[in-house]
Length: 81
Image (cartoon, one colour):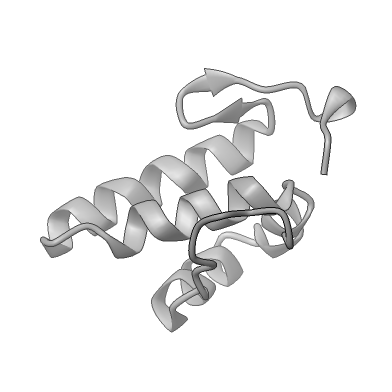
């Protein structure tokens, strides 16, 4: 992630718990660094709890599907990390 020109966001405890509860830690960790950082930035920047939850729910759904990132088709086999 050294090439990123933007801040790097740490995962809050409530996101760790959600990923753990859904057994998605490995799916999350297998995503490229830019995707992990984008998800955390997007979730953390939400001002309302309802918006944070909606974004977490979307991330969980996308991780379960495995081939979606921010509502866009994503091919993990051709990824660049």
